[in-house]
Length: 194
Image 1: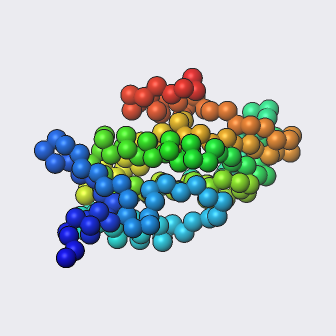
Image 2 (image 1 turned 120 degrees about the vertical axis):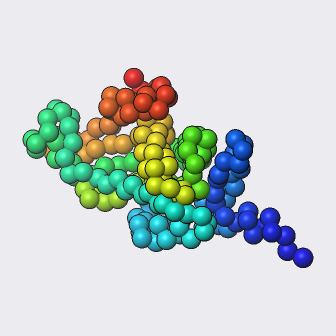
Image 3 (image 1 turned 180 degrees about the vertical axis):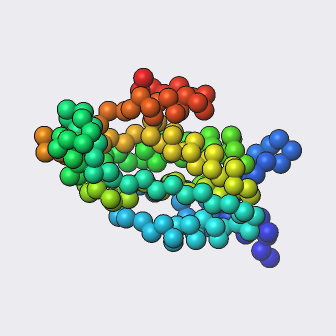
C-alpha cells in the first residue's frame, strides 16, 4: 500500500502552517542547487519548477549574464580597460552548494515560498553568457519577487565564488562591490565584505 506522504515528499515546497514552517527539501532527483560548467535552458527550468506543485501561482526567475564592460583594472567604464573578454568563475565544491542551500533555507524562513532553484555556472564564460539562474515559486507574486531578490543579493555577497576578469590590461580577481553589501544590509544581514 502506497502512502500519501511518499507522493507529497516528491514535491519541493514550503509553506507556513499556524506559524510553523513545513519544508520538504527535495523532489525526485531535482536538486535545489546546481553548480555546473554547462549552460542552462531558462524555459526548461521554469517548466520544471512550475510543475512541482499545483499551488504555484507565481514564478519569479532572475538570469544573470556576463557583461562586456566593467570597471577594468583601471576602473574606468567605457574605456578599453573596462572591456571584458572573459570571466572565469571558481568555487569550492561542496562548500559552495552547502552555502547556497543555507541561503535558500533562510529565504524559506522569511518568505512564503513553495520552491526555489539556483543554478550557478563556473569555468570560463564570455560576454552575454548566462552565469546564474535564481527561480522561486510561491502562491502569490509578491513573495516570489522578494524571495528572488533576497536570494540574488545573498548569492552576490555570501556564496563562495571567485571571479577573475580578463580585459586588454590583463586578468584580475574581482572584489566584492560596496553596493552589493549595502543591498544585503537592507535584509538585516551584515555582509562580511565591508
